[in-house]
Length: 318
Ligand code: AMP
Image (cartoon, rainbow, N blue to C red):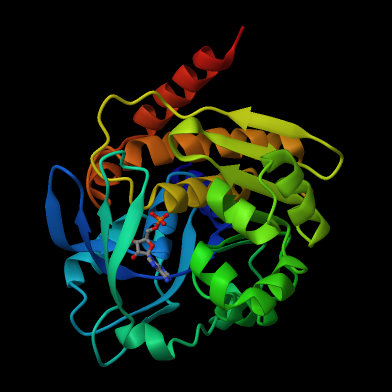
């Protein structure tokens, strides 16, 4: 009997789809009006992978240098994050430093040291190439395109981007937009990309560039989801009295959304699933900003996720 249960568990476990996440892994220095911390675990892929891991197993592709603490790698391991695609190379890890102004919404990048990221060539292990769900977390669109070149037939591809790439790599970004299912970006980036102040019109213009679905994040005001047949969903942000570090909110949002879709593993991704994914993304992002780096996600439980999801539901029903 025990043997049969073990086999059933094994089959169910194997059937759980992994989500493939590619992006930056960093050591961050973050300054807010109240505190400053150096050498924190950061990077778009770190936040996204941990966010996704609350819903689905993850396969992670990124690069770190010799100075990357072993403890962080062990932490990824405890979160069902497969590290076959993690490159550990000679040199120093990518470093980013940012400072938030009083409103905690405006951020200035103080410094960037590309280090091992400068020659990063994301190579997908053979077992990653058939992944159905892919999140291209924020990295250069040339690298995002290079990852897509190696994929067999992904079912749903989400990409995140930032103002830097809109400003310096627009051609590659436009090429990427023709190849993905969903683009996630913030309101300022949507306006920059489309030269359109109205966000509804901006989303339509982005859809005309390729992706069927667009998510526009509005920081403390939530996120908007647009579908191809005029579908629209608006999700507020969780009302938090104290925000300690907004870094990685967008990445943990995208990771949770991608992880949720992967866990559902439906033959076709429906708008309803995307709405749920956006709510789970907002739940993870709201927890993430409660502490620096990934500290809050380290102690987060599945019950915490469920209870805040229920609060979101309560908050939006009338
Ligand atoms: P977010 O707060 O969602 O914009 O993401 C912040 C994370 O993005 C930080 O942990 C940084 O290490 C990482 N990051 C900052 N600039 C870049 C960049 N140019 N490419 C990739 N990742 C970056």
